[in-house]
Length: 567
Image (cartoon, rainbow, N blue to C red):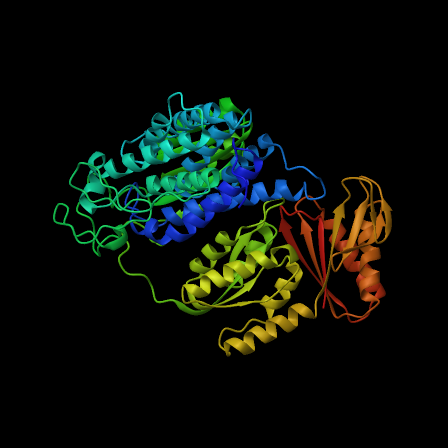
């Protein structure tokens, strides 16, 4: 049996993240089903899962960096990674608030993980979350977080007692949320975000004590039966609305116009923002005037912005004026399980989901009919994000192109999850974006699924790939010793060329690859690479290799200045 921690150290933080992800994975569908506030869009459980998945991945990255050492990472490194991962991966209103809660906790736990520090961390977290929400509402996750912090107060010296008290306080507050928020009372459910927070705190109890908290219904004194922490209450009427097992909503619209406005904002806008504090203060004021459900979390120059608006363009423009927005996600409620949709369109027979390294290729693949997921530099997509893309593709059959060897396991996990939801998924193990382009070029949705997958796999496998990168430090490579600032030419994932500049290195890489033959060269240029480089490389190929064609694409903001494919 593993030794239980006396304080919340890095290993305990890692365990907490892992257990929280498992808990939200188990309860995701039930939490989605009771999501009626602020918008009945049925995605709170999924958004919380994706947020915690990003937090857990960031903590795992910290541990991976210490694999060669004999000691675990520092607690401060682990909790800061957890908070940063949640911030950059936050999804939806609930995920954004959870990210702020974790950030508030991390600011205290970085200095110590004993009982006293945890009590203060919970208090700071609840206060920070309320400050991040433009118009706090009781009966939501904010209420549950505050109750958890208040229940943890006292002089108890043991960490185990503090985490148990916080969890119990959260459960009791969750059971009372239908009394505080009318829309919950009418639907006969507890707050979805609050239930997710109870699951996260339950995982903390298990990480610290070694025992999972007792699961089961716990109701408050009000009239609403409240499914809490995995429990279910069946069949008791609340205001004439039957409450199904698991707290799921009955079919049909909710009769509570004062709480859920079917004529409310049409879009959810989310983005990360690099900006100074004073700019963010002005941004909050402007976005508050544009819409509702405004949550802005973060600090130290990096912020996560969430708002519901009718004018999505104005919300993004406000971000541009404040700083540099990126990872922009705009969801139209009327087309993405929104508050006024009753019947979903019939799914397509087949779709392709492709991971791309930049906005330019995203546009190209979208024009070809694919659903895209952008992998920005240093921010690979998590499995939940790929599952979400498969769902958005809304097809019975899906071909998944990860376009990165490092995403192999992530993509396999996403494919397996989608299969449990009834989608037939084939994973084509593309290792680079140019292989994905080649596979997409031969995709024919009208032929048999297996035949289409075989053709796409063959096209990807017949495409050799290369990329140029800038060396960050001196190191040994298969091509010799490189120095910081050298241009590296990687062919099929291995360093084959070390050069002084991009044009010369690119020519050398092309010559080595074309020495083995080829009919088509694909060049994908990064956003800062001039068109003159593409012109020069096209001329180089035309003069040195007869009957070899060249195509050029703009990749936008991508990690590598140049991607090369040879078919």
